[in-house]
Amino acid sequence: MKEIKAHVFFSGRVQGVFFRAFTRDNALKLGVRGWVRNLPDGRVEAVFEGPEDKVEKLIYLCRYKHPHARVDDIEIEYGEPEGYKDFRVRY
Image (tube, rainbow, N blue to C red):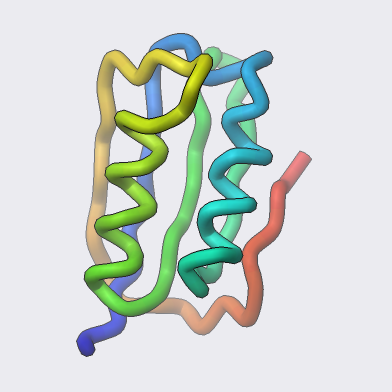
């Protein structure tokens, strides 16, 4: 399976609802590497690296399956993996 990197920006009600923890927990379950952080403008930024199917599944889970968040918009830029070794919440 091809490894990819997705640089993702989530907009909507994505801060103050444990969105980063949800993202981290699902990334760890799927074996996706990278990071997630809140932005001052209310969006959440993330970088996901791993097998294409796992990265796409994580994007889907974040967009549609969080029990309290509401993702109104998503921006994704794909690129070459940078070699992250784990998944972290950045502050």
